[in-house]
Image 1 (cartoon, rainbow, N blue to C red):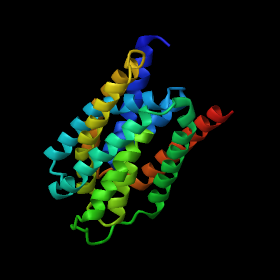
Image 2 (cartoon, one colour):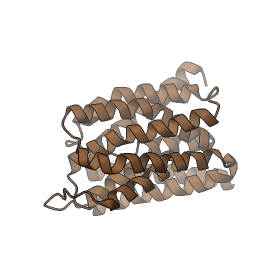
Image 3 (cartoon, helix red, strand yellow):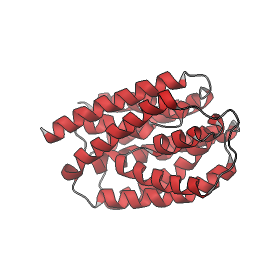
Image 4 (cartoon, rainbow, N blue to C red):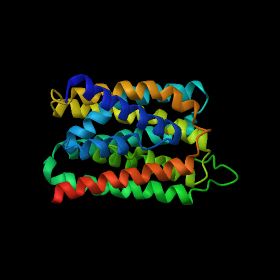
Length: 253
């Protein structure tokens, strides 16, 4: 594929997935990574490319939510440091393993994440009175979410946002706080990927995802309360499942 067309394709993927992520607080990574794996990109390179692009897109998205008053600083305090630690551990593990060996497992993980998103779409019912208490469990959730995010090239949102909202956290503040924290989680993962991987042949992916995502991020932040969340979650989950099944079939065939 020609360079210009390749960048345009990845920019379109980045735009669509960032619109989803900014509106739902999840699914940029798992959606993008599912597409890249289905195109034959190795797991470590796919996750690294997504996270390199996310350094910018999550920064823009987080700043947008901050400006709009969608950030709960007490929640950020509980999520940020554990998320960074979990992300660093996951990135180190991913770059230490053979891509061909781990690829079916990553696809299986993404398949499960797709199922989680679909399940949450039909069962997610925040409490009538939002829960403003942020205890130790949220820090453990951040640690787990960061680890899953690095290993699967995404998962911070599906793990963290959906769990917090199911526990009764305020939807708008949860989405904004999780997006804001994600920038720092992604930054640390990207630094580790840069130190351990070569990106010479994957720069088109990074540039495309970055440009498309950066354009979509401020738009998505404004649409966070206006899109039909359950229907969109169900669609995204089914899309991730389909892409993951295809990747599994190709990897095991």
